[in-house]
Length: 213
Image (tube, rainbow, N blue to C red):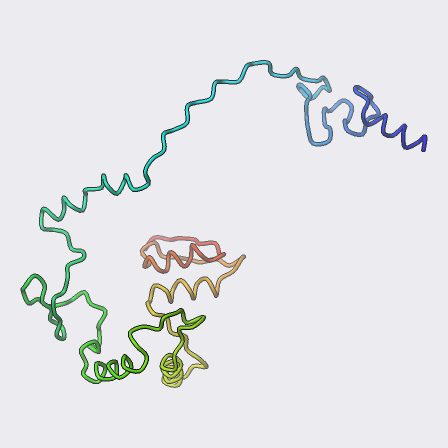
């Protein structure tokens, strides 16, 4: 009992060289170095009064930047804005935009299946049976028999064990990269890669090493 009290007294006594909380002569203690110049002398407290607190910045409306953005409007006024041009009708490689028939060279409809009569007919049958949407994610309530049928047929065609379909290429890249990559993995990523690949790399746990295209 007396020994425990003596230990407690050694720890709490100020200036006691036997205190385990301070290493004599080198200013090292229990993680708090209060010495000046490492000679064991205690540095005086800073008595400089704290600087007055700055006034809090005014609260900004997060939509203010949207209201002030006008670069797109300036380009539109010049007739050079290429985005969000509505297509009024489409037939094969030709579309009607602004009442004028034009050749479409920016579409992802490489095989022309969007206007294939067989696809349109099959889509109509599916709409009658399943409705206009899956009403849920694939993971929970949105998987229908057509999904699994298509995945099975694609797996056989590609001679693979299985196929998993994503609704867009963007989702495919994000989902695959997050799943395959983990801590300790490295990604050599072309700086000119599509945004979906870049986002997939960022959202994964791997370290991304970009390189020039």
